[in-house]
Amino acid sequence: MTDLLTREEYGAIAAEIDLPATPFIDGKFQKGSGPMMDTVNPATGEVLTKISTANAKDVDFAVKKAREAFEQGHWSRLHPSERKDVLIRMCKLITRRRHELAVMESLDSGKPIRDCETIDIPETIHTIKWHAELVDKIYDQTGPSGDDAISMIVREPLGVVGVVLPWNFPLLMMAWKIGPALAAGNSVIVKPAEQTSLTALRLAEIAHMAGVPRGVLQVLPGDGPSVGEPLGLHMDVDMVSFTGSTETGKRFLRYAADSNMKEITLECGGKNPAVVLADAENLDHVAEHVVNAAFWNMGENCSASSRLIVHKSVKEPLMERILARTRDWKTGDPLDPQNHLGALIDAEHCKKVGNYLKGKALVGGKTKGNFVPPTIYEVKPSDEKAREEIFGPILSVIEVASTEEAIQIANDTSYGLAASVFTANTRQAIRAAREIKAGTVTVNCYGEGDISTPFGGFKQSGFGGRDNSVHAHDQFTQLKTIWIDLSDPSEGDNVG
Ligand SMILES: NC(=O)C1=CN([C@@H]2O[C@H](COP(=O)(O)OP(=O)(O)OC[C@H]3O[C@@H](n4cnc5c(N)ncnc54)[C@H](O)[C@@H]3O)[C@@H](O)[C@H]2O)C=CC1
Ligand code: BAL
Image (cartoon, rainbow, N blue to C red; front, side, top):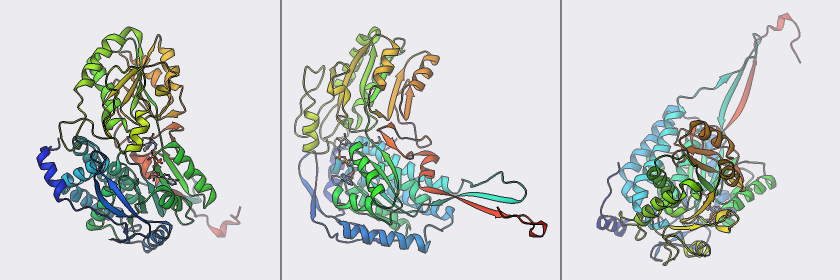
């Protein structure tokens, strides 16, 4: 368990912190060619710093440097165990600077410091370490090619990889992408969300200090049209891995089609159901998971269970427990480790979330500044709150009369990222898990699996590969067949 500091101690770190404020290109911080951009603390409205942003010219330069680094091979052709050593050294440096990174993340994104300390930073370290440890333990294949040939099926890094990130888990999503991409030997250019550039810039600096060569990990802050679009359209970028909204994800498919057919992987939105069946056991446990699933990270989470689909026979006792627990979740100053919810990312997003606060809430229901407390409504399946991705701490409760109805409603969405099912009956659990169309289905708990399991969505929640697990490694490599003829030329014509 991570050691949490006091509010005063976090305040002291915040006062001392040295914030990065320019793109990290070719191994150093250097001014970008784009305009200056405020980065704002969403909890207070205070401008934390002004960041020099990148534009298409910087994208071009960074791609050139990334390609040079890839071709020189100081990283891409390093022995896998040596790449592993560098990435593990990077993890040690992150560990040493964990409080600083946690405070930076909390200040920049409004996330509660307790989550930054106990989830975002440890998971960032764990992710990079896991992929570093993996890379010198995986084997290529040989095919069943008969006696006259050897066919080698090898995985090679893709080359130059673009990573376009959201603001809800700035550091952790960066780790989900750069962990496997760097371990596999690629050069990576990261575009953080415009709201949250700080920890991405710091992480690039730390990686360089650990021994990642210049040009191999670069970070270009700026907005979508100025940096994300030229990265997506660039003829010398081999792949873009994206996490964010479905709408922007689709743009990357178009960018790929309009340029060099680069590979695209998309991890997009969700409207995830928690399905509680009539025989669900231990309603205290169910309530704990439902509340956590809906409200952690202020519901600004692609896998948040924003729909509770509950059988009418257990609804009343379950709702009693859910409401009691929800009232215990405090919202306020993100740097106070007592608080479970901090601020939403910015005023614009808060306004969007606020527009869903209509009708009689069972708990919560009012915004204050950029803060929205955990809020619960009982709704019909057709209600916009139950259909649209809100990305805020709003849980919609839908009563059902049968398992079939529950599954039908769970699947009645264009998304398919995650779901959970609560039931005491194993057969029913497995049937439901198979019938629900989602990339991750958890049984009797909420979760996203762990680093060893793939994460990504069905339908409009995802496209291409998966984050996490060996599948993430595969996503940042390409297959090559090397066919070696062993036949004896003196025995006749083997052509064809
Ligand atoms: N699946 C997820 O984890 C996330 C989902 N969302 C959803 O998306 C909604 C909108 O949030 P946004 O921050 O606007 O998400 P977004 O999808 O627009 O932004 C994600 C990333 O894409 C970049 N981007 C934006 N427009 C672009 C363009 N034209 N070309 C290239 N790159 C571009 C952004 O700068 C950012 O780095 C949220 O309310 C939420 O519903 C947002 C963030 C994460
Ligand atoms: N929960 C991790 C992925 C995301 O929210 O974007």
